[in-house]
Every structure is written in C-alpha cells, then in structure tokens.
Length: 266
Image (cartoon, rainbow, N blue to C red; front, side, top):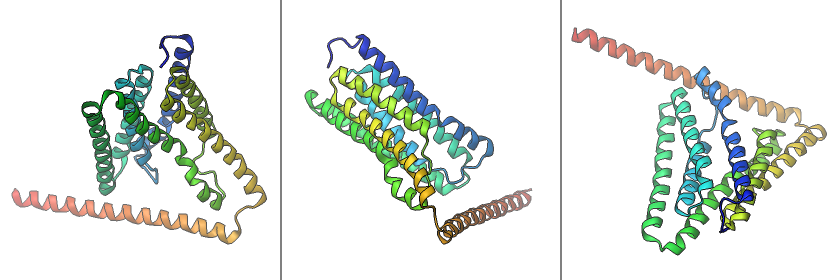
C-alpha cells in the first residue's frame, strides 16, 4: 500500500469515487418514492438490492480489517439506503409469499457473509486475511457490474434496451475510474481490478444501448413477434389482476370470519 494514505491523489480519487457511488445509490430514490406513493410494486425485481447489501457489507469489512478507511463510508451508506429500499418495497408488497422469500434470502445471504468474515478474522492467519476477503469482495463486485450484460441476448431478441440507463452507465464509468485509480495509488489490486470492471461494464452498456437503437431501425420486430410479445405482456397483466382479486377475496373471507368470531364472543 502507499506510504501516505492522505496524499492528494489518494484523497481526490477517494472523494470522487464516494460521490459517484452515492449518486448511483441515490438514483434509485425516485423508483421507490413512486412505489411508496402508489403502494404497488408491479414487476420490480428487488433481489439485486439484496445482493448489493451483501457486497457493500463485504467492502465495509474489507476496508475495516485491512485499514482502507476510504472504502467504508460510501459502502456503509449504500448498505443503509439499500436496506431502506427493501423495507419500502416490502411495505408496499401485498404478496405474503414474496415477502417471506425476500426476508429469507436476505437473512441467509447475510448470515453466510457475516459467518465468512468472522471465520476469516478469527481463524485465518493475518497475512492471508487480506487476500481471502479481497478475492470474495472483488468477485461480488465484478458479478454486480457485469450482471446487466447477461440480459443482452434477451434484449436483442425483444429489440429493447430494457432498464439500461445512460446516466447510470456514465456514472458507473466515472465511479469505476475513480476507485480504480484509488486502488492504483493504494497498490491494492482487489480495489483496482474490481472497480475497473465497472468502467468496462458501463462502456459496454452504452455501446449496446446505441447498437440497439440502430438494430431497431434496421431490423424491427416483425408483426407476429410484436403481437406475441404484447400478448405475453397482456397475459402477465391479467394474471396479476387475477392474483389481486384472489388476495382481496381471501382478505374479505378472513374479515368475515373474524367478525363472526367476535359476534359469537359477545
């Protein structure tokens, strides 16, 4: 590691990295504000936020144990906000089964990671702790950054850019560069490689975004494919409406049973 963690280049990249990561985290606030106001989660996938809590916690542990304090504040910030997002989602979700699945996933995932950190801290040799924690934290962050790329084949087939966001991709590039350089100046390859993967992912997403714009102009979906796609969406909506009707009926039955029980008690 660099002999002076307070050197100008380390402080500059640390501050810039924290700012860009905070912007990425806060970019989700409008989505969850809408969920909170409408009390409707729709088809929003909350599980990536469970994953983000885990990978942020691992960076907090890595920064604390390896004495890299610049990694701690922004990842602790990310943990708290992502937990708040999950709580908002669960408050608006009416599907009890889904709520239980989310809580179970969060508890199991966090229990595994916390147990891993404690075992490494108390049982692993001091000279190996950095490498063990560094490998896991790097793998988690690289997996997070590269996960949108796995959806490209589906997006290409449907001729859509999905949830790709140019501002978020640009922010990922700058955050990756800032924290990647932070790793260079610290001489920490785990910080360097894992964060530069965010830069790589952001560039690939931007290129794919514009590539899909061209593809949709040159080779749009055929009418039958479009109809199939729309019919699929219509079917999903009908199923969601039917599920809501079923839940409402069940709730009314339960209320009726409770009222009858209270009447008998009186």
